[in-house]
Amino acid sequence: MESTASDLWSRVLSAVKTGMPEQSYRTWLSGMSPVGLSDAELIVEAPSEFHVEWVEDKYGDALQSALRRLSGEAVSLSLRPSGGSGSSDGGTVPWVEVGSHEHAASPGSRNEERAAGRSREPRKPPLPLNERYTFERFVVGSHNQLAVAAGHAVAERPGKTYNPLFVYGGVGLGKTHLMHATGHAVMAGPHDATVVYVTTERFMNELVGAIQTGTTPEFRRRFRQIDVLLVDDVHFLEEKESTQEEFFHTFNALHDAGKQIVLTSDRPPKELPGVEDRLISRFEWGLVVDIKPPDYETRVAILRKKAIDDDLILGPDVIDFVARSCTYSVRELEGAVIKLLAYSSLRNQEIDLDLARHALQSIIRPASGNGPVVRAEQIRDEVAREWNVDPDSLASKRRTRAIAVPRQVTMYLIKEMLDESLVKIGRRFGGRDHSTVIHSIRRVQAKIHSDDEFAHRVARVRQLLES
Ligand code: ADP
Ligand code: MG
Image 1 (cartoon, rainbow, N blue to C red):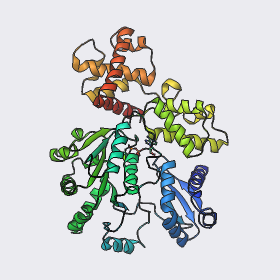
Image 2 (tube, rainbow, N blue to C red; image 1 turned 90 degrees about the vertical axis):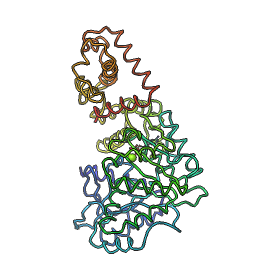
Image 3 (tube, rainbow, N blue to C red; image 1 turned 45 degrees about the horizontal axis):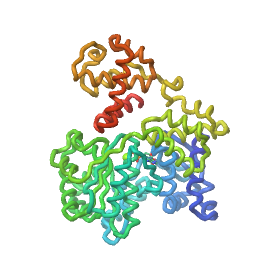
Image 4 (tube, helix red, strand yellow; image 1 turned 120 degrees about the horizontal axis):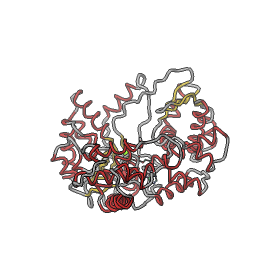
C-alpha cells in the first residue's frame, strides 16, 4: 500500500516536473510525502497549511490531472498539512468554467461564497479542461473516426455545423476526452468563445442549489451567456424532471442564439429512459454520432501512443498481449498499463511479457489465462436479460426469430469470451453441429459491423459480464 502510494506519487511528479522550473519543483513538490492510497484518493502531506495552499493554487490542476490520467480517472488527489486530518471529501465547485473571461459567467456572489466557505470547506482544485485531453493525444481509429471529425467541425465553426453534437458510447471509450479536445480546439481558434464544461451531475447540483437559495434567475443568466456548452453524461438526466425542464430552456436559449452545444451520453437519445420526448428531439436536431469499442489495431496504436507520451518502454509482445487482454475500452487499456507500472516498480523488474502475464492475471480473459471465469450460463443469462427472453429458451430447438438473435449472440460471446470449441458450444445449444455454430457467430460478426445499435447491445452485455 505504502509503496504503491509513493510509486503513484512519484509518477505524478515526473509527469509535472518537466513543465516547471527546477527550483520551484525542489521548493514545493519534492518534499511532499504520499501517505496513503485508496481506490478513490491519494493523500499527500505537505509541511504546512500554507504549503498546501500554495501547491494547490499553483500546481493543483497539473497534479490533479496527471493523477487522474495515471490512475485511469479513478483516483483524485488530496493534499493536507502533515499531522492534519484534512478531509478529502470534494469541495463543491459546482461547475467548471474555462475559456475567455470577459463575459465569463462567474458572478461575484459565488466567488465570495466560495471565499467565505474557504476556511471550513475542504479545498479541492476545480476541474478545468484536462490539458491532456487534446486532439493530439487522441488516437483516431475506425471506432471513433466520425465522432472525431464531428468534433473538429464543431471546433472550426462553433454553432454553425452540428448543433447540438451528440456523442454516445460505452464507458471509457473516449467521450469525455473528445469533448475536452473539442473545447481546447475552440479556444485555440479565433472565436474568443466562452467555453464551459459541466457534467450533468454538476448541472443538477447547481440547479438544486439555485432553487434552494432562490437564485434561479442568476443560474439561468450564467448558463445562457455561454458560447460553447459541453455537457457530459446526459444519461444522468433520466427521471429528473425539474432538471430536464431547466435543461430544456437552457438548451433552447443557447440554440436560438446560435451557441454551440455538445452532449455525451452512454446511449443514443432515443434510448434514454425517463427523458422527455421534447428533450430527446432536441438532442437529435444536430448530429448524433457514436464511439465504439476500439478494434485490435486501434488498441495497439493507443498503447504505442501511451508508451511514447508517458515515456515507457513496452515491447511489441507486451503491447500485443495487453491489446488482446483488454478488449473493451480505452480506460481498461490504461488501467492495464498502470498495473504493469505498479507491478514493475514493486518487483523492481522490467516490464516484459512474463511480468505482464502476472500483473494482468486478474483481468485476462479466461481464454488466455486462468483469471476469474465468466461462465457460459452467465453469458446466456445476461444476453437473455438484454433481449428480454427466457434464458432456457435459448438452449431449446425452437426457431422463432425472437430467440434466434439472442441465441446467436450467446454463441458468439461464449466463443469470444471463453474460446470454447464450436462442438462444445453446439452441445450447449441442444446439440447443434459446429457448422451451425460457426454460421451463427458469423452472422453476429456481420451484424456488429452493419448495425450500430446491435453492436452497442452486444458490447453492453459484454461489458456487464466483464465488470
Ligand atoms: P468516456 O468519457 O467515454 O467514459 P474517457 O474520455 O474518460 O471515456 O476516456 C477514458 C480514458 O481513455 C481517458 O484517459 C482517455 O484519455 C483515454 N482515451 C479514450 N479514447 C482514447 C483515444 N482514442 N486515444 C487516446 N486515449 C484515449
Ligand atoms: Mg466520460
